[in-house]
Length: 337
Image (cartoon, rainbow, N blue to C red):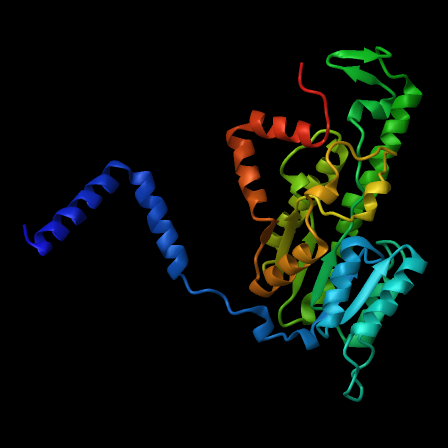
């Protein structure tokens, strides 16, 4: 058999196999089309970092601080915003120390800081006056919860047995107060931020909004019910905003647990983190920051950090019992009865 005849038969065999498995053929075709589709130009090609005007909400510590330092180091105009004045001033000084020095007359300050909560509109005015507009809004807000939901009503649960048998009115009210506190920070704050700053992005040649969400928004875990719910709500809200404002690039960042996070000791429900120590398996701030900056530059809408978070999301929908078992183990929660 000649080489040409063998090649012809091999092609026929592959074609016949793909004909028997149309789903496989469709997936291969989609992958080839995706790889051949021309990619968008990077955002930095039209908006260099040295010209980028960035607001980071929730920048007095943790991931917000790390993002502020990276943007400042790369020469962006950075405005940091938070409620804790002492910590905010410290981060501002750190940013100024590593930011390139202003060399052009009339360029203005590269590092700004404003203290307040999400409803303060003078932040928008300060940025407008100093820089004439805004290019990138990073919404970094979140308080965790670490207690099983029924414990918020002073119930001790063992399987389907509760002690006491029912919560009283006062216990329910305490649970409601915790829910309101979490919702105010994790959901209402980012919603108000969108209302405040979306118009300010209209002057940008490449407007971008980054929501620092969480893998917890799409993959459930025990003891995090309020946190999961609030993060899922704000993620859905910003995804809807993206459909209403196609002129803005929306990026949702879904990191798994991050090590060294100070908010582990500031749970809204007074609970303590259970299970494995995040220092033994969590992401570093540098990993998340690198993922954020790369995603914004490439106009990526959803960023999974690490990428296996996407795998966990799909496995949950296919085999929810498996992910539930893994989550219970990680968070030190009793096995199901």
